[in-house]
Image (tube, rainbow, N blue to C red):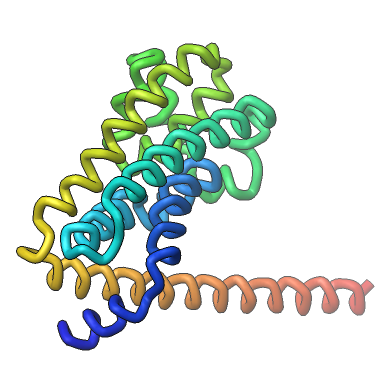
Amino acid sequence: MGTLVQDLLDSVPSWVIYLVVFLLPFLEASVFLGFVIPGETALVFGGVLAGQGKVSLSVLLVLAVVGAITGDAVGYAVGRRYGSGLQSSKLGQRIGDDRWRTTEEFLNRRGGTAVFFGRWTALLRAMVPGAAGMARLPYRTFALYNALGGTLWAVACVYGGYLVGDVIGSYLSNIGYLLIGLVVVALALHLLQRRRESKKSRESATSDLSVH
């Protein structure tokens, strides 16, 4: 298994790794991808590969920091643009009232620093930027803590993976692929369930029309 994973990693172009390291942190808060795949997964994994000499550490650090900061900025803009409508949207309802309530309480309790401290928890990292925009937190305050938190978090994750390097590299590789496989299966089952529900709804609507 380890050899197979290693062969797959060796065949992946470096630009694909760079793209993933940028995209996962960027999409984590901007489209709430963090509920599916936490952004640090890509950063730690990329750091391990940098420790093995497969990619450039400096390029990874830049992409990770930029992805983290800009992704949260987009999440803030979305929350500010749509306000409470974001929470009542189909996506917002899927997130659930409990998660929104937890995030709002954390934001009210911490104020601007919630943007910094929320960065270190997967749930809050995905939720706080949008909630901060909804709460009309001044952008200057948000931008300051977003830059500080995003930079420190991204550097810590990438360097964490870089420092372990070969020591647990194969372990992280195997676990990473296992997690990705589980995510793919979960998404497939979710889409299948949605399709069945949609079909039942159409059949029910057709039945009601025929009765009338």
